[in-house]
Image 1: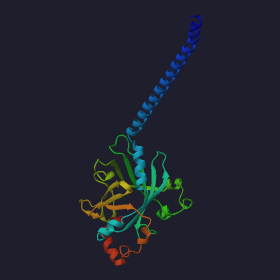
Image 2: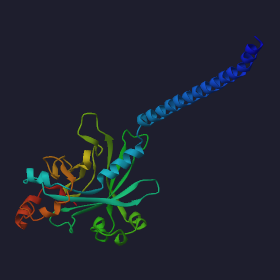
Image 3: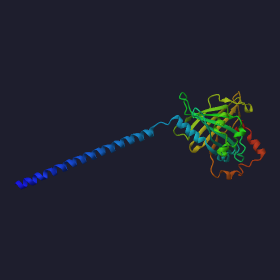
Image 4: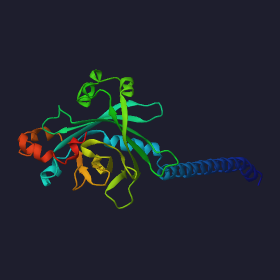
Length: 281
């Protein structure tokens, strides 16, 4: 009995220690599990918050700026309807940033076969719409003080372009402003907009004012429709059939420079130029 009691009493501490260790291990595992679940909940909440966070107008301005940038052409449209549309080249690239955070693009357009001879040169200023306006992005067009100095700006090495401070100094007359809004769900476009009622003053070819419509589609496709009207509301310049459709240029585009679509005689070119928006300057 005594021996048995001794064995029993000697085994008690061992059994007691084992229970304590087991309790501590279980508590630690429980704490780890709770901490892990807490991290999952917090991480999930942050992820959902990030997904549902509304896009700011600054974000929209950045998207519009990037969509306008790069080289595009109207080759496909000109092939579909050569009687009304030219194969034009449109190229845009960053030129400067203004003090208010607006971004300046240099933009030029030329006939695809003669990219070194642009017929239109402009500065686009892209910025978020003011809070009081019902739009997302404001796109303003400005004339350039010395267009010859900027010819083929985007095709030059950066060290051969006018400096950003020179660009800012060469922003001249304000021409138009188009407030852009996100397109409604189900439309092909991402952003669209038009000049306010009454357009902006314009005197080319007997016009009294001009209007401009712009749509930005997926894959950086741009639709532009510029028109001029006289005092009686008659259209005096610009394409009547619809907007020019500029799609990003493919790497093989230069192989098409000598296609029949681009090899018009001067006489044919003069006939087709009449009424086209491209010579509204």
